[in-house]
Length: 408
Ligand SMILES: *Cc1c(COP(=O)(O)O)cnc(C)c1O
Image (cartoon, rainbow, N blue to C red; front, side, top):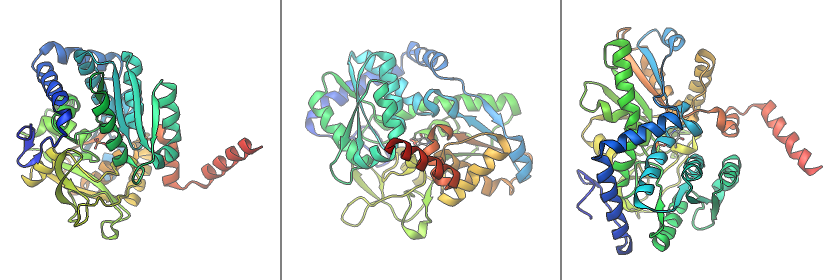
């Protein structure tokens, strides 16, 4: 299968022999579903009754006035069930699991959002569910672990390696190899071996399909630029895909963390620090050292804190179709503050990267230009992370008092 799922040298499926039949079955099921018009209907039906599709497009009047340049629109993926675009992917894969007649799903999760989304889908469809999470992340993301367990998922703490996301991915593959007859691995982003990059971006493409229609209906014109944050790349590809053949500039925004020069960042496509390699079953740009050892990444937004990136994005970087930029933790927290105060919207820290970059560029555009920002998720559900990013002393006091209540 190595010849399939390549995007000009990126991607592929580097698999252990034992998983090849399982991947063939998945590719086959996905291809059939894709060419069955009834399937897309079933998918949009469940997304409109169980999540909140179509999600609205919001005109950000106050931000537009503040920057005095382009008219700013926001695609509201934060209004999905479980608070982010992740629902688009997990519900789609859930329908494929039903088609394959499997009864159990597993997933990896770093920040926990993909774990919560998968556990939610499993509860809804009646699947057994196991979530793999690094020990460090379990400690950092207790609220999400709490919800996964309430939703009936078994959360397995991974104590191997550096005890973060990539170790959880390795454990998920190990589980899959043992249980592939009953089990599907719900990968969380447009990464990993073929067909995951294509499949995940196929489900996420609902974002751009809607947004394109909505902006044409409202403005009778296409946007000049679209901004989306880039972790694994699924929300970015989701909104970009519908505009690839249009004269629209596409901007992917990565995490510059503490600054590109400090090395504490997760900029794979917007810095010189990443190189092409094969890991976790696919070929793409990784933040790795000369020996192929993965580097430590940093971002205030846990969802952008990843060493690899979608092979489809790596390809579109090389062709020049997408421009990649990076914004620092500080710029992101400032952009989040401004958005909350001007529009009453609370983007996730991940999404705020796209806002921060758009804010840097909006004034230089004309009043005739339209820019579209993908708000991939909402920040209020991540109050622990967001409040930490703001270092709010009253919040810290509240947490201290809570802790003391438990000790008493
Ligand atoms: C997980 C997540 C991301 C990053 O994932 P992509 O696959 O790059 O989209 C971005 N925003 C939010 C709100 C997330 O939860």
